Structure formats: structure tokens, C-alpha cells
Amino acid sequence: MTHAVILAGGKGSRLGGCDKPLLPLGQGTVLEALLKRLQPQVSKTALAIRGDQAVYDSCALPLLRDEVADCGPLAGIISALAWGQCEGASSVLTLPGDTPFIPEDLLHRLSPGPSFAMSLGRTHPLVALWPTNCLPLLRGHVQAALASGDRRQMAVRCFAARLGMRPVSFSDEGGDPFFNVNYPVDVEALAARGS
Image (tube, rainbow, N blue to C red; front, side, top):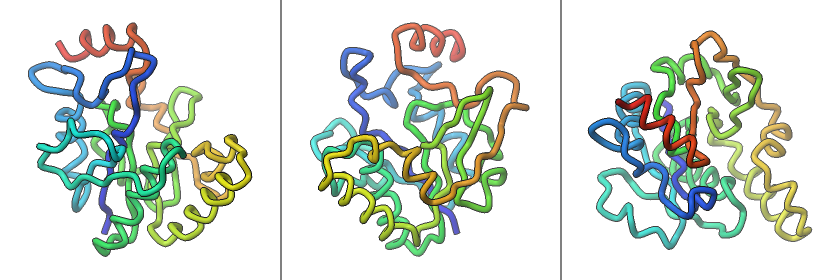
């Protein structure tokens, strides 16, 4: 059984500070478009957020607040794996909250995990299938990185390499199925794709 967690704890600082999953897309939001493609693929879906994000309080999804502060996306992955374990899932699919055009067979192609997506020569370590039993290893990895002050160890790629995650190519999709929003030009491209 595989659950999914959308990582929505980013601050959107390159866009002047915003919650990117709530950006408009077509008649709805980026989050709504992502959920439409994601939910048929998995058993349950939750949203990983920072502890101070009240903007999602009315969201119908389970909200997973970071249990560890100041460790970037790994905080969301820790929350995702902890929730998955509590829910009895053997694996958790994670995705950034600003990737509305994911393939409709994403989970099938990433299985079995541990694995992460690649497209057009770029790796996407947040679009990944994680076994929930790697949670103790991840918590230990983060604790060691925080204790040493080595911020490089906080990169998701670093832990993915330690776990021996398998890359899966999605370059046959035509365009980038993992298009995400980082800069104002991406917001313009998003609007063009959603119209």
C-alpha cells in the first residue's frame, strides 16, 4: 500500500514569498491540478507543511507539520514517512506542491522504490518513492547533519544517494512532466499551460 505526501512547506522566496501550491491554474489552483492526477494512483494523500503555515488549515487533506525545523525538504520527508508508517503504508510517494503536470502512471513507473524521477537530463529527488522503513535512517542522517553543521548533508540528493535510490527516466513524456514554479517566468509559463 502506497500513500502520497505533497511537500508544501517551501517559502516561495524566489517569488517574493508565496505558497506555490495555491497559485492559480486554469479554473483552480496548482494543488487542485496535482491532486486530480495524483489521487487515483495512491491509497491516501496528505500535505506536509511548516509549523507556522496557517494558510492550509481549511484544507481537507491531513496536514503533517514539520517535526524537525531548519532542515529543508528533508523535514517534509520525515513527516511523510512517519505518517505513512502510522497509516500502515509500506511506501510513500513524495512530490513538490508546485508540480501540477505529473504523469498519470507516476507511481507505477517508480515502483518498486526506493526510486526518484529524472526528465530531460535533470534529477527530481523530491519526486520519489520512499520505503517507510527508512525513517530511522533518515532521522539519524538529519540529526548527524544538524549536529555537525554540515548543510550539504541536508540536500535530499545526499540522503537519496545514501539510500541507494534508483533513477527512473521520464524523458519520453514530451516536455517536462515535473515542471515546477520557481521564478516569475515560470508563473507566466504556468498560466500559459493552464489556459
